[in-house]
Length: 111
Length: 117
Image (cartoon, rainbow over all chains, first blue to last red; front, side, top):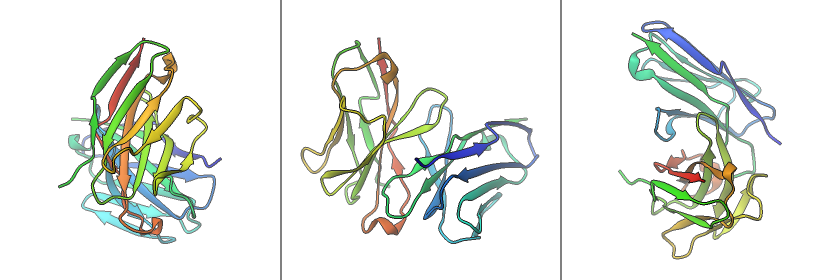
């Protein structure tokens, strides 16, 4: 079945440093979504990417979808303590209703 | 803003007992999901539900699990005979007001923490 891996599993950064998490699917995707989960919370939608090579920005966050629609990345510039949490990609193949979540990257920001 | 609500927030049950987890999806959504998350691990897909029937289910969703939309409002997950390894946070999610291709985001509830002793 479809597998979605993320690296790294954990990342500790000093406040102000940049952070990137990478998401890789074993199959070509219809679209990919990114979610953030704070400790003790539920996943909260951040962004969706649909087109091959698409790049979207949300303030300090930059999201990319690979040309082959099998990988994606989330980059945070100048991290803040409020960025702490686990970032998940969620991948959907064509003709399916289900989103498969990646393994997640847990970000810790040290003040 | 409309939200997905789940009850109870925490359920403790003995091994072998049946549990029903309840969810009220956002009212105009058409697609419903159950996911589970074992502490500190990834969010695992269990089942998707559309047009009053299961669309897809994972290997985890065996004969012990069932879902129902009994009254057009609630969406329930039943575990017939709970096992220790069923202990997890169970999230309900809903999305979509049209075709699946509309790519709407998943809206998650706050989850039910199930503890099987």
